[in-house]
Length: 408
Image 1 (cartoon, one colour):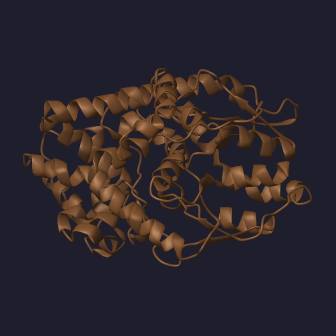
Image 2 (tube, rainbow, N blue to C red):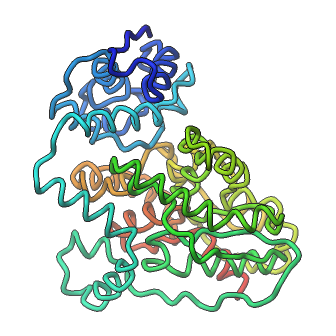
């Protein structure tokens, strides 16, 4: 696709990158077949091809409108289109550029600004944990839509105390420790059982995705730099073999630190090194299976697994969880229909676009329910809590199931 950048974007980092991405696009439309919002709305402008057309117009100098912003806002950034695209178009990176430009040019209303500021600031604030505790204390009194975002209080259990020669870093993240703390401690216990010690750098926090995808991209990059500073001493000393993510949304962002900070001379090399060291927890499973095989007491019945978009499309990791748990004696199945589609969580999307998010959630739960599982498993806290809001079946991180089987 030929693009003639307006003078405003010629020679700029965002213009140069966007032009290179657009050059790959042949406008074939294969992506529309796997775009969740296009499937729901049937509007070309609510699919990747239409959104690319809108962004191309803006980059060529046409003034964006509120309608332009709305179509970009409706994108889940699930990156399913990237898995489908025969030309290798980096749509996720392009939409980040497009959204940032449109955000600068199209003012939002006061109410919309307030909601987005609250999400960007509140979810990454130290005050989030006490606010969540308060919400859990009065959970039964909350309206249904709010109650869906507040999980029942969870006992995290004990953090292992043994030391091992093999060590990895874990990222606690911004909301997971307050919402579902057992995911983190279960990860540490499972790794401990396999002879790997999990370390946490206390200065590290949100991966930067929340602010970045709410168009506070400078704020997101500052959080990335803070995490790099927190982890770098461990990396520089050669103390850890990997930085392990048990939330796939964080994982896809940290893997791309090198891209996000490529123009920062003080952090570019470090960011690339951090990204190269980053592993999703599922990538460790093949190595964990031999160490855990004789320790696990598998559970009967079927477990339905929803692979998050950030894992299967963002990180291009598919099948690892199902295969790893199967090797340990569990029966794990993905939905027979639309296992590739987003559940509608998508970070803050379920708050900002609740109608679309709930439609996608219920559609996903319908397909998972056909498996008649005893529980639903996933690999990202956003998906887990979003799905749990629509079903009585337990929805858990797969590592919690493994941890429970080890304890039994």
